[in-house]
Amino acid sequence: MHLNTAQSKIKVTSNRPLELPTRMLNPVFPYHLAGLGLMTSFPIEGQGRVNQLGGVFINGRPLPNHIRLKIVELAAQGVRPCVISRQLRVSHGCVSKILQRYQETGSIRPGVIGGSKPRVATPEVERKIEQYKKDNPGIFSWEIRDRLLKEGLCDRSTVPSVSSISRVLRAKFNIKDSDGDSGSEGLEDSDGEHGEARGNSHNIEGILGESKLDKRDEPEDAAPQTLVEAKLVLERITDKRSILYAYRSSVVVVEIQNHLDN
DNA sequence: CGCGTTACGGTTGAG
DNA sequence: CACTCAACCGTAACG
Image 1: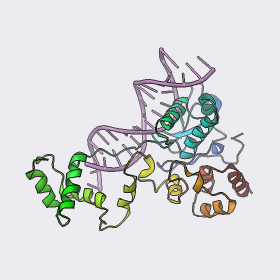
Image 2: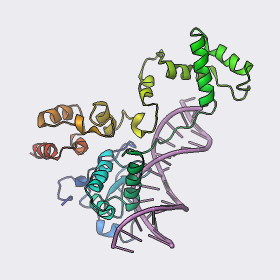
Image 3: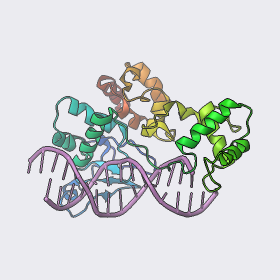
C-alpha cells in the first residue's frame, strides 16, 4: 500500500535528519531480498538506508519526530510493540527504546547528541562566577578569573578561560553578544534534556518547531486544525510532501494529500 | 514468537 | 578553524 506512489527515488543529499515518509519508500527496491541476509541495511541514494523491514533510516541519526510520535500513539492505543514495529517498519529494539524512554521521561524526543561536558566551567565554578557577578555587577571576566584562582577554587590548570567565563555570564545573565545572533535563545530550556533544544534550524522538524507546531512534547494544540492553516505553514516550507507527515491531524493530512496529488 | 539487551558502525557538537 | 571524543543514534542479532 505504501509503494504504489509515483515517487521512485529517495533523495538523501544532506546529512541532516530527513523526513522519509513510508509512502515514499522506493518501489523498485528489492525489499523481498532485504530480509534474507543477502543485503542488510541496503544503502540507497546518499545516506538513507533500508532496514530488514523495508523501513528507511539514516545511520547514526534519530528517527524523525513524526515516526517517534506514531510509535507512542499506537502504543497508547494498545497496539503491541511487535505490531508497531512491523507497521512502521522500525526495528523492535528501536520501538522498545522509544517506548521505554517515553515511559520514563514522558518525552518522545531523542537524547542530546554530541557536544561535550564542561571541563572547566563545572557547576560549582559556574555558581561562583554567578555569585561574583551578583556581588559586583561591574566585575570583569579577567577579575573573576583572578578571584577564582586567589580563593583557591581553581588552580592554573582548571581555571576557566576569560572567554569561558564570558560565556557563562552570557548564559546566566542573558547578556547580549556582539554578534547578536542565536546564542542565548536556548537558555530557557536549561533542564537541557530535550534533544531538539539546540541546533535544530536546519532540519524540517526544526523549522516546524520554530513555527510553534512541535516545540514541546505535546504539540497538538498548536498544530494546524484546518486546511487553510496548514496551507499557510506549507507555503513557507520547501519540502511540502515531507512536511505533511509532521502533522497530527489525519483529516487535514488527507485533505492536503489529495490537494497535492492533484 | 515477543521483546530486552547489546555490539556495531555511524553522526554530532561543545570544548 | 580543524580536531577530539564522549555523548547519542537505529539496526541486527542473540538469548
